[in-house]
Image (cartoon, rainbow, N blue to C red; front, side, top):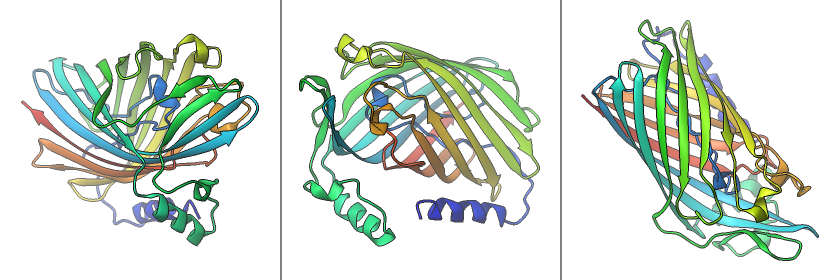
Length: 327
């Protein structure tokens, strides 16, 4: 039943009337939302083409997620129960033809939230388990991971529009998209932790992103590798290198709107806990719509859910974004 909504979305794409694609608008913005993965550099997908030389592009993306992970054993105690809003602001500048540089700020707001009753009701309606969610007070807040000696490996308090991290990046277009049939870019990124700088470290990553046009469709792909560094207490259980991938399909529905479905994931962040909620690699299905308005504006609305379940990925994320190019 978890596949019901995305399958309907894919069927709607296939059943659409033939339309000659003009240009790729995807992929949809995606970033792994698992709180344990977010202690290092998580990959955010983006469009392949750099901003034009001499132009600026500014955008805001909001991602609202519901998080619940609970497990207790002799070696650790994990309790993640909260809702979170990420507010990501990104600015890019076309430094030269095919080259852009930029930066982004991520603000984080967390709290007990209001969706617990709805999620419990929905899971019961579909006959799905609640993973002990209904055993805890609705609207509760918890964000901690301790070891067998009850020493905090990770603990965070509620936040309201707190600056979480700063990133700097550069992108170089290797294969141009002049004919709209294919494109390939390379991207480098540096993550500077702010809110938890005492625990986290500076991380770097490199990524290749591209697309191919196939009739009325675009096929998107992204692969990358990033570092993952922590303070000594957690570093011994951390995978120091984390690969990532994304593959997706885009179908233009009109000259201004495209539907996109994509599957993405990253390597496991930790090892040695003996619990899939900690040691497994997260995977997510993302689907939604993206489009343009008056050429300079671009918008998107997307839904992200963990697939398969039982990994550190969050239950779901609702994402909306808008950006504008200034020439």
